[in-house]
Image (tube, rainbow, N blue to C red):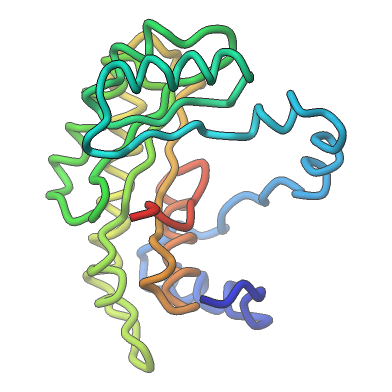
Amino acid sequence: MSTAAPPPGLIEDLRGRLEQAGVLPRGGPRAAPDPAVLAERCEGDPRAFAATIDHTLLRPEATGADVAALCEEANQHGFAAVCVNPLWVPECAERVEGRVRVCTVVGFPLGASDPSAKADEAALAISAGAHELDMVLAIGLLRQAAPAGGELDRQPLAQLFEDMQGVVLAAREADGPVPVQERRIKVILETCLLDERQKVLGALLALAAGAHFVKTSTGF
């Protein structure tokens, strides 16, 4: 997997194609934060650095005791969030302190759940006290929509957008203890399975659907 920046013009070209096809609204996504500013703030300040970390436990064999220890470590170090499977959201919501947030996963780890199931999963997690949702996009649909060396296929692109937007809207509209303006949606691309064009398309679709971040991988 390459870590180099996309070739000049690739993002603008793909954004224009998606807008022309009616998959994306015109105007493009907002600008990303400057990583140099974050790095400067974290340098020499362990607490500032800790506040950028999601303390994660997604192993299938994790127990309640493991989750309790995770929350205690997050409270102690001031991590940004704990990230757990949906079963453990209510317990984490009771245990985290201060500015530590509760994150859970949607459609994890394959991304191939029915879109309505993903939306329901998102709404249930918000109702249980989650601040953040990490959803896995439909990886196979993205690969189908932009085959290597082939033309873009509008139908699976539109399905991808609707899949992500459904989770975003469900998270916004659900009743839950976390204020709407504090809820965050992150889309996991699983970049090891994607070529460069597919990564760019996935990121553009995620941001246009209303997600706040994209992530590289499930870790699975």
